[in-house]
Length: 465
Ligand code: 5AD
Ligand code: SF4
Image (cartoon, rainbow, N blue to C red):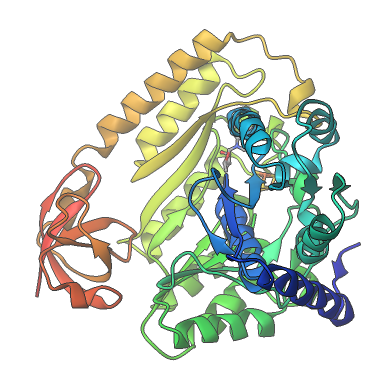
């Protein structure tokens, strides 16, 4: 069962923040914290809450672990290489602990929701003081207080379907582009994916809480809201509302701003959703719709609940209703049992759909998932070859794809210094395409109209009109 953390519990944690702040204020200099977040936007959002709590405890922040008083790794478990990077970085902290035995080293996030990982940290990384799971984020003040008053190793990974903790302080990474979680967890159990095991069951925040956060962000100058969830399309099912309804409500907030969202599951990308997006002017004209494979046989083994044909129908409807929409996707190469024929179905799908860009991954077995038990006869070398072939095919498709924007005038959110040239400004079009243009720095943080003059493979260049 999902647990809403009570106001009393949150007040108790606030009390621990004050106690920590009191202890820290007695130091000659304020403590510094280094928070390193790995992985997806949901983790980045959690990282902003970790930093929010630490800031209220009186901490300053450092981009490097060396010399920090508190080091926290907020980890990702989605693929093995993400976990390997965490272990590599954790190993390197051994010297830091030797140099400064008082440093508090903590590990949280998706990795530590797995028993075998916790065991490995216990055994092989004795310099780690604190391990806390995704359901224990809001208890960080109490855990830090414990470390400040009595140094003993603590492992706190509560079981359960997941919690919702409202009212945590947030230290935003970017005031212009603000992430707002709308739901947590996932119920889909795609057979390759560890997320449902480490993030618990689907649970939605109340529409009022989301709208209040959105309004405050807009009033504080945010120009882009990123609505976050593992599968935003199933927002609100247990509350008797829906993602389209939420989009309409956010779209109705006063002011010029853009609404983005991620991630979206094709099985729930309904016509109603696409109609809603076409009618809501503030919603991004970019659909990121992870297809994972072009073979219906593999999609079945992945437990994705749609076929290649279903997916193509969705794409056709998007292009009919929103002809200027950009379309991107995720693809996994080398799922257990995938044959050359299955892989060629993926190649033919991407040739047929012509995605604007792709995020491509080689399948990585995750302990505890169904796919990890399936026979997987194709060698790593062969999968590597397929992977490079996929990149080549997409490279050919991507070439010249942005030419269609030349001559168009697009509304652009100006975000900062140029990417093709730092003397220019940079921003994003409603399709999320990068565009550089000449202009005064005072324009950063606002919207401008830009006429597109040139197209590169990954960016546009234009002029303010
Ligand atoms: N191996 C490879 N890629 C994966 N993804 C999720 N789990 C795995 C895995 N075990 C990819 C999917 C998902 C993206 C966020 O990560 O494509 O859409
Ligand atoms: Fe993983 Fe599938 Fe849930 Fe996405 S929808 S988080 S791929 S289980």
